[in-house]
Image (cartoon, rainbow, N blue to C red; front, side, top):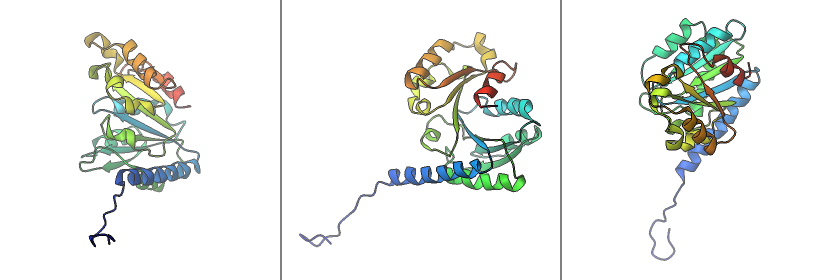
Amino acid sequence: MCDTCGCEKKRTVDLERSLFSKNREIGEANRKFVEKYGTKLINLISAPGSGKTTLLEATIERLLPSYSIGVIEGDIETERDAERIRRKGAEAVQITTGGACHLDANLVHKALHRLFEKRDKYDLIFIENVGNLVCPASFYLGEHIRCVLVSVPEGSDKPAKYPTTFKEADIFAITKVDLLSFFDFSIEEARKEAKRINPQVSVIEISAKTGDGIEEWIKALGF
């Protein structure tokens, strides 16, 4: 109660700060959990249609059966991407958000346990985040590597337009480079802007269709 007038005092709680703090705490738990099994966790962030699933398919083809791979698929609806991954021979768990525009650490925590119910060893687990270049950037999931993908049809201005997303990225993958002759995309501009925001980011040019850049991508993952 207020001593002056007897009204109820109101306390402002910074819910956003509390949310992000709790998410990071769970994210750190996720990282420690997978490290117990010698697993590397990769978070893939991009807009819809950038080629995340196609890149994963090409990666699985190169790494199986030498390495064990799991994938956590995040989508608003359907299990179509998870089905594509399973057809390539990797384990996949689908997270259907029902409208949420990103995955958070708690959702990934639950999915990790579901993956390890399927097998007890993974060398590599990919998190294919919900297609969005804004919200996923704010949620640490426990990943060892964060990769942001931008496809040639999307335009080379994306790093400049979404700087927060690129600020924490370890890898910037420019995908669908086999389409460069059909679109006004400047590799130089995209690279320059990404490096301006994050000088440490590795930039890789990839075509999952032709195989260009796939070996460099796999080396960047540490395999």
